[in-house]
Each structure stands twice: as structure tokens, then as C-alpha cells.
Image (cartoon, rainbow, N blue to C red; front, side, top):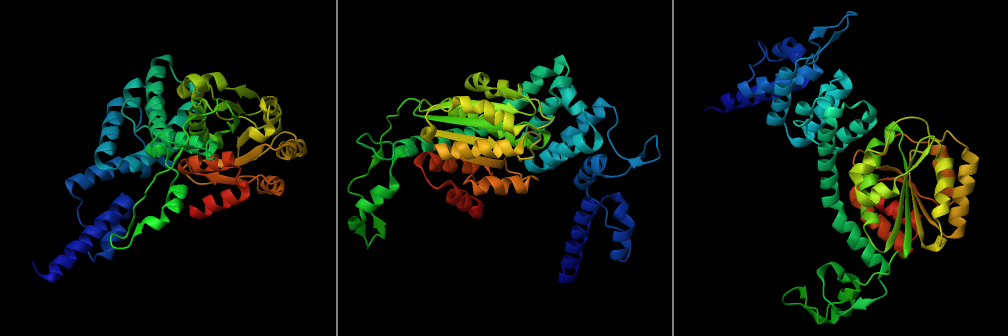
Length: 401
């Protein structure tokens, strides 16, 4: 095959890819760009194009004359579309397409029919949508909805549980070393420092004479951790992660954990947190107003030993209650010795819109306000329990991201 033919084939493939991105409406423009007709899509590309067109192309016309697309009310058609999407696209792309199907096209069949819900790709965004529609989900679908939430919760716990346990154990027992060897408890800094004299230049390796371990003995409930979560609609992803992290905290004997959710009312989720984070999430109702001050006032009752209390406020800081009183309360917490963190987001999707003015007021009190990805949570909690400077820790974690 000549180089000219090869180049032509590469150009045609690039045009086909642009055709998939831009949709059928771009056929004419792409054809002109190619000096003729737009290259035909392959059989697989045609199936991909049809799946995308159902959500993103303007292929129909609704009652008010506005052109729109969708899968209509046909369950078989919707089931086929779900199968096609999962066949032709990767897991992360499927999650985006499903979210767009619900938001752009109102395909509530995905959520209200058990047969449909079984076929969706479980993800944090879908759980957030289920939480926001909790009161509307038909009885016949509730068990399937719990299965979807369970799949997401189990995946998050699998990723975070061991890391958080190791971080908390190491932070609370840094002053003690144990003769009992365990890989999770190795004090790397101390071990390396004490064995530098054993560096083998020929091998280019450090050969430790002795490995030092943190003590695995934990003081029972030596610290109180309070997770106070804003359950307004914009915080959906953060609430899902916050609930799972709270349940992990609750399972650790060294921590006395309280989990609270709020809008204009306060809901104490501590009991559900200790049993099952899925139950806790179904106790959350996303949406409504926001009264942060009211929730902070409620949480103050759990502070018994301020210098051994970590207060994590998970909110975008759009306060509908008494802002000046909120600032005063949090200032008093910090003054008493409580470690206070304000997480504007606990998610992989970035920091949402937030009240920058209130964030600055809290930062002036020594309360760092920043977005945190779930994988940074163990390091953040360990630093707080060790007594690290929280503002410096927050700056380092955000700069690393």
C-alpha cells in the first residue's frame, strides 16, 4: 500500500471520529472538508453513533416546536440503548452518558423500573440522583436501587477502608514502637534513618539491620471525629463519599464518630453510620435550604475533649442561617483546641461553586477551606490527628493535586 493511500485512510478515520463527536448534522460540512462525501461509518461506529444520537442529537420535535431527541417511552428501546452504551464505551464514558440521559432527556425509566436500573453502570453521580429522588422511587424499584447504592458504597470502601485504618492507627501511635512485625505498621522514616549506616553502595540498596514498627495497640475512642455534611443538591457526590468515610471512622475503636446531615433541619445519622452506610444514604434527602450555623450548634454537644476532637464541615458555605453567629461558633471551636476542617467538596469532580467571602473569614480563623479528593482523605485525617498545621497541610495537598 502506498504512503498516499495510507495517509488517505488515516484522514478518513479522523473524519469518522469527528463525525461521531459532532453528530449527523455535521455530515455536510465534513463532506465539504474532504472534498466530497463524508466517509461512511463502520458497522460498529454506526451503532455507537445511534447510541450517542439518542441523547445528544436533535432528532425529534416536541409539542412546542422545539427540536429534541430521546428514547421515548419504549422500554425495549431503552433496554437496547443501555446495552449498546455499555458494549461500545468504557466505564467512565458510560457514567457520563447515563448522567446526561437523566439530566438532558429526563429518562427516569433508568431509575424507576427495576429491569432498567439493573442494567445501568453504578457510579457516585447515579447514587446522588437516587438520593435526590428518594421519595419518588416506586416500591417495586427500591430494592434494586439499594443494590445500585450498595455496589457504589462497597467499591468506595474497598478503595479507602485500609488506607484510612492504617493512617489513623499510625497517627495515634507514632510515639510507640512495637516488636511485633506487621508491614502496615512499618515506621519508614525511623527505619531508614536508623539504618543509613547500612547502605550498600555496590547493590545501591539500604539493607536494614532492624525494622521499626508502630505499636498496633489502640487506645479505645481516644479521639472524637464529627462529620457534618451539607445535604443541599450541589453536594451530592460529597455526601456519598462523606457517608462512606464516616462509616469507616465509626468502625475504628480508637475513634468516637458522629455523622450529621443538614439543610434547614439537622439529621443525626450516627446510628445508621455504625450499622450500614447504605442505610445512612437513604436517610439523606438532597435539596432544600441551608442552615450551617444550626448544624454546628447541634454538633457542639459532642465535643468532650476539644484537643482530641476533629470537626469536619463538608459544605459549599452558602449559608442561609446566621453567618456571623456561625463564624463566632467556629472561632470558639478553634480557640478551644478543636481541629476544624472545611471541605468545600469531597469528590473526584473538583471544587464546586462556593461562598468565597465566608471561606476567607474561616481561613482567617485558621480553618482551611478546600476541596479534597477521596484518595487524599487518609493523609488529611492522619495529619490532623498528629497535630500537623492544618493550613499548611491543606496547601500541600491541594498543590499536589
